Each structure stands twice: as structure tokens, then as C-alpha cells.
Length: 497
Image 1 (cartoon, rainbow, N blue to C red):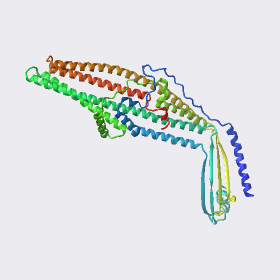
Image 2 (tube, rainbow, N blue to C red):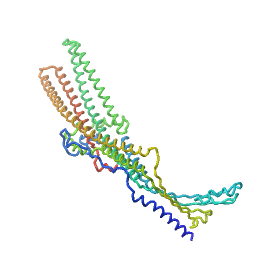
Image 3 (cartoon, helix red, strand yellow):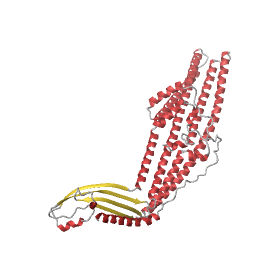
Image 4 (cartoon, rainbow, N blue to C red):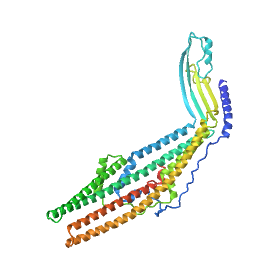
């Protein structure tokens, strides 16, 4: 009989709770706006002529330099900024799990054992205040003692009537996706920075080799002037001029060496390696290198509209906008009432032997409704704040798109100018080489002096240095173009991180 009465009581309580919940469930909705990616107008093509094909994911291989390939492969696994970006992805995923769990029912197990001895000086009537409370001690005479045992389960659930939790999950998911794209953007930035630092290192290597040759020519010129002065064929003015040229060439050489070391140090940071160990590896690679790396002549750029899908930073900005839009829904849902269900099923007994029995069953179920009335305008202000933040995220995304288009246009313009400049310096260096060959033939025929040949050689080395600088600028701006295009990842790879 007791079991039947307990069962009917529990069903009756549950029926009343469901009667309260049902109307709310029927009108349940998701507050706030549904997100739609903004339409951003982009030009039909870039202003500079370039192949329209898709840029290569592993674009640095176009430089045909095995050492560059090895450095980038190492950097992608060892770079500290990239490793931090990976951790931020993990943080975002954990946060998304926390937000998702907030909307689920919670169940906890409880167990308690107590021993109570009633005071002998307490009036019997004062003990009645706690009688009947779940889990409370029974009433007894003063001075008596008793044991109480309790075990059971508690459960609670806040019904997501107006979609606050669903919007929070949307926001957390979008932020996780933004973190993934930011991690991919870290790869793009890293590969470009490694390439630029390494290519600058190689260019400085070439310029130092040219400077060494120029110093040798300057030394021969000084020796020639010293012989002429001793023979009375010239004054010390030519000798002083030659010494000045040597000092200037040596100063340039020392500056080049310092700049090359700085590039090696920058590479070491990007690879998370000690500078000295990396410099030794770079020197070994320089000794073993055959030929000179250079940027590909034709770099495909695709269409401007493809930047919206290809550049990870734009994808991250778009996901930030999606998250900010979902935050509006969370704040809007907070303006409406919240409904919660709680329940407990306990076994309470004064005897451990009789704890697990139907007579010890003590079920409880409750439904609660909380409606905001007065909060000083806090909820409305929060909603206005989220709308303002979403508008800021939209403008940030639009600005990121415009900046991306500018980056590509700037890089294309610089690269086009670099190649035209390099062609001019290449022609000048070729003419200087021909001049050296002609002067050498004339020197062999006794038509000109050794000084004329040394002067021609110095001019040719100066032209070679100009060409090396022009080639370095072309390589640097080619790497900048690949970075602006969002190269270095593929669509399939993006979802794997």
C-alpha cells in the first residue's frame, strides 16, 4: 500500500510539472537574429596582369631551394607562435564543450550518515521546527540520540525555452572555427617570414661574396698606385683615393655581415633554435648549394573573390562575426523568463538495515519559473552592447577584406616594378661583363693599362651588387605576394587542425 501511494504521489507531481512545462515548450523559440554571412563586393580581377590559376599550397618550393624547404618544414612544427595557436584551438574546443554541457541535465549522487544526540536542556517543543524536512532528524525526547542514513540522486535541468544555450553553443562553435583559421593564418605568416628571412640571408651571402671580390680589386688598385708613386708616375693622391675606396668597401662588407647575422638570428627565433647552431647549418648549406634560388617568374593569383575563401585571416574574421551575432541571441534570451526542473529521489532511514526499502523512499520534484522584472536596465544594456559588438565585428570583417585586396595589389605592383628593375640591372651587369672582357683583351694587347682593367672590374662588381639587391627585392616581394594571397594551406587541410 505504501509503495502504491508513493507511486501515485510521484506521478501526480510529475503530471503537474509537465502541465507547467508544456505551454512553454509549445512557444519555445530561439531569440536573436539568425546569422548570414555578409556579401562583400570584390572587383572582377586584380589590376596587375598575373596568371589567374590557384596559387600553390606549398608555394615556397617554387624557389627550388632544398634548404628553404627544410627550414619551413621545421618551423611549422617547432615555431612557438604556431604551437601557441594550436593551444588556443584546444582552449576554444574545451570552452565549446563547457558551453554545450551547460544546457544538459545534471545528475548527482548523494550519501550521508549522521549521529545526533539531543540536548537534555532543550524544550521538547523547540525540536518540532525541523520536523518533516527532507533528511531532517526525527523528533525525540531531550537527551536521546539517534542515527540517520540517506542515499539518493539529485537532478536539475534548465529548460532552454528561448534558445540562450543554443545561441551560446553557436557562438562557442564559431569561436572554435575562428581559432582554427587563426592557427592556419599563423602558418601562412610563418612560412612567409621564414622564406623572407632565408632569402634575405642568401642575398646577403651573395653580396658579401661580391664585396670580397671588390676588396681584392681595390687592394690590387692600391698596390698598382703605390708602385706608380714610387716610380714617380703619380702623386700620393691616387694612393689615398685607393685607400679610401678600400675603407669604404670594408665598411660596406662589415655592414652586410652584421645584417646577414641578424637574418640568421631571426630565422633561429622562427625555428625555436639556438642562433649559433642554425648559423652553422646555414653555412654548411651555402657551401653545398649549387646555383642560386630565385622566385618563380609566373605566380598565379586567382580571382579577388577567392581571397574570401583562401585567406585564413578573413575566414577567422567572418567566424568572429558569426560568434558576435550569436551573442546577441544569448543576451536577448536573458530578457525572457527562465524555467527549471529539479528532482530528487532519496532513501532516508534511521536504520542502515532498513535503508534500502520502499518505506524509506522520499521522492521530490519541483518546477521553477524566474521572470526578470527590475534590474536597472542591465539586461537591455547587455543586449545593446552585444549588438554594438556585432556591428564592430562586421566592420572589422569588411575592413579585413579591403586590406587583403590592398595587400595583393601592393605586392603585385611591387613585384612588377622589381622585375622591371631587375631586368635593367641584369642588362647593366651583362654590359659591365662585356666591358671587362674587352678591357682584358685590350690589356693583353698592350692598348690599356692594368689600372683600366681594375677599374672595369670594379664597375662590373658594383653592377653585380646592384643586380643582387634587385634580385633580393624580387624574392622578398614574391614571398609577400604569396602571403597576401593566403598561400600555404589547402581547403582540405583547414578542417584537420
